[in-house]
Length: 334
Ligand SMILES: NC(=O)c1ccc[n+]([C@@H]2O[C@H](COP(=O)([O-])OP(=O)(O)OC[C@H]3O[C@@H](n4cnc5c(N)ncnc54)[C@H](O)[C@@H]3O)[C@@H](O)[C@H]2O)c1
Image (cartoon, rainbow, N blue to C red):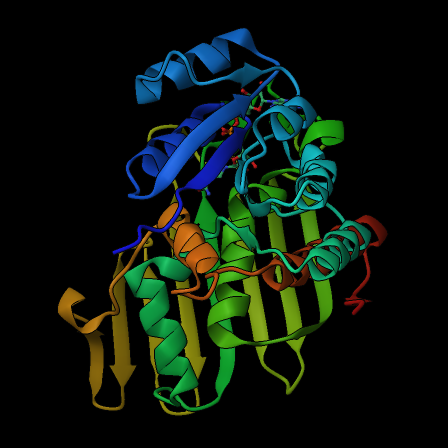
């Protein structure tokens, strides 16, 4: 029996999250880690330590990693405004790409990376892990199968001590972050709602409070979608420390509702049967973005979060920033 050639994987960005990807990749059968890139010597050392591979080639620059190790695939986990160029460079070097959220920081950048993906025929996925988490998969399938009828209303919030935790870091520097919590953790919230409901925002009103920073910290957003459904997003970046990330999503339809409570639990409300908690065994089996990415390269799975999801999120995010800036409702540009 012939054995499939190993998939050579490189990591761009060896911070806290990048090291998580590296560790998971190191545990996937048939993956060969070929190198890592990060300008920080300390981050590279921590990455070496995370996988106990001190000889794994390390580079200060991602282009050198691409040229010297010729990976089949890379994972990008760097400050947000760097994603665009790193994605293009990686695709042009012939690599499949799994990029952290947000995929890019403007709709123009989204068009660029999608064009580069299409020109190369390679995979470009986003590490939106909710696409492979059972509660979100369950809700997407339930909505698609008509289990709550037509979606009419969504209300959701995400709370985190984002303002406290990000002080002095690249996350509050727009030239590196591209934005605040909306462009960071709340990117997951916007994506999850759009992906599960398939709603298409049409008009957006928003209030954003930057507190003492240059980026959005607290956001209150209302969108009217094509077909008339209304969605409220609340991003609470100034939650007190000590709670982690909290996230609730309530989706009402013409015949019932679905509630995801704090990322873990799902309640399916039907007439006469309120707050029916969905047992885990009834939810689809989950995975993780790295395992899914490798399976997509092998052709055994679809990429869970394709680049188009990044486009949808940035279209909505840009409309939110614009509506908050001008103090008026704006149309989402497609
Ligand atoms: N999916 C999730 O749940 C999740 C969770 C946390 C972070 N993230 C995402 O992961 C990415 C990284 O976040 P983090 O928390 O690991 O941040 P971090 O600050 O811990 O790490 C960022 C790393 O990027 C490195 N870096 C800076 N410039 C670089 C360059 N030009 N080339 C290569 N590396 C460079 C830094 O030295 C640092 O080591 C972001 O996109 C973030 O939004 C996703």
